[in-house]
Image (cartoon, rainbow, N blue to C red; front, side, top):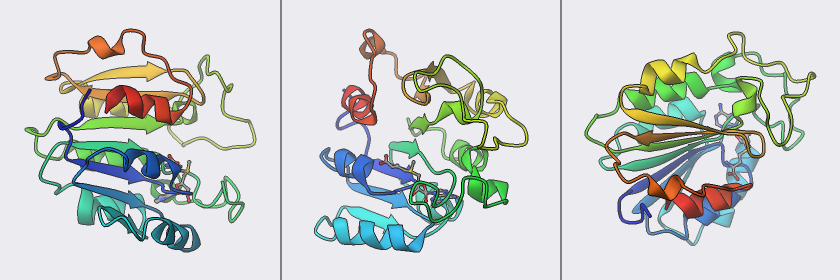
Length: 206
Ligand SMILES: C[S@@+](CC[C@H](N)C(=O)[O-])C[C@H]1O[C@@H](n2cnc3c(N)ncnc32)[C@H](O)[C@@H]1O
């Protein structure tokens, strides 16, 4: 649907690169993905070495946004999926990293993206809504062993994007937030909106 309307794709949190590989099947001019864990980033560089549109950035998501993301000159799809560095790989425990802007960088990421030029129709997709609130999530609420953010809510999303974007909460999997520019008047594609894996989300939106 938005094919040809988004020039760039910017992901925070690469992990194995599966989301990125799927996004790369669409004709973005460039796709960026930031990964803080060096070994994971190296594997991703290897995986995408033959795709010159893909740029893997071995930095924290906020450093990568600062250096590459916020200055992108065109509509961008941001897929914000960085949290609990190294936990998926078993390199770190879920609560091992204490610095909040590294462990759960979403608010800072959104502050940076919100400061981008207002003329861009950026779409922002956020994974793991259940980190930020309780709800009827298909995969259940955040396990008690995982410590949530100090200030646990999504009020900052409304504050930062309430004027410019429609904010949609989805409860499939671990929950998603979709921030869709209000200037996108045709939202008919949201009828029958259903997915239970990110690929279907991408399929609906791209
Ligand atoms: C849920 S996985 C990402 C899955 C991937 N986006 C996909 O769609 O296939 C989260 C990844 O984010 C990384 N990560 C966590 N915190 C980060 C941060 N502050 N900056 C960059 N990467 C981070 C983790 O190491 C992990 O590899």
